[in-house]
Image (cartoon, rainbow, N blue to C red; front, side, top):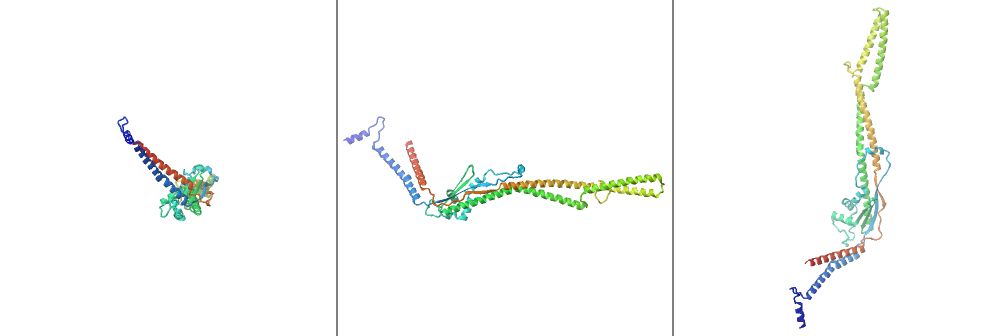
Length: 395
């Protein structure tokens, strides 16, 4: 009788026209919801985190590390030709050598080369039973590159440019071998970059020097041909000698004219001395006319060129020779400046921490890794529960 009253009271309207459900129904739903939460806690958090921590603690293989640190240095030798630096500057890249090495150590070409030399796939598969942390066989170069980024860490100082590389492997000797190989390939890259910079610095200066040298040789060859054709070493010196000869002839002519006038005063027209004097004057005058014709521009129709033309051509060659010599001296100075600049820009790899070898394994950091896995799984489970409750509240 009491149970019937209780059942009737539970179904009595609540004054709003709605019949309230029995109290046992929401209680049953609450139990189901709790069961789902507990089951999700087991499936999403407790079982996976336990399995992951057991695997990390019992089955993950020990990993050893090797550390090396280096920097790129350049020779800071003083340059005695810095005064010419304004005219011989060449363009420089905005990227530093340290940034280039930072990208190079993580690049696929380096990984491919080291894989051929060291057999990285074999090194990273020393412990095949550790299927989580090992590389496993027959992987593509993309997989090897991804695994490399996980096993090799590179850091660079933003202000100092110092590079630190840490390599990991399942054997300490393998970790050190990888570090040494990275160091050797980095040194080769810096040497190649230094060689390219030196060649670029001296390339154009060397080309200008060769051009100036060839031009100077051509001018000298033209002067030699000119002398062979005209049968004269220095036309200017020849002109001076001819002018001297002409002056001497004019003096002789003047003396002959004076003597002839004296003979005309004291001798008769039939005097043989007057005839010889007249012939002498004519001979000297003819010689003077011939010398003038050699010097003048008009000439006398003879095969020999006028001396004025010869001197004019020779002066043009001398001007070209002087200009070529000045250009050659300038190009030679620029080339020496470029070589000095190339030597000053010489770069090399300075290693201040050689590759180390580990005596005890440092990886995987089981406590840290286990904590991170546990926290990550718990976060996933909490997010799923929060999403479920949020969806339920919106209904």
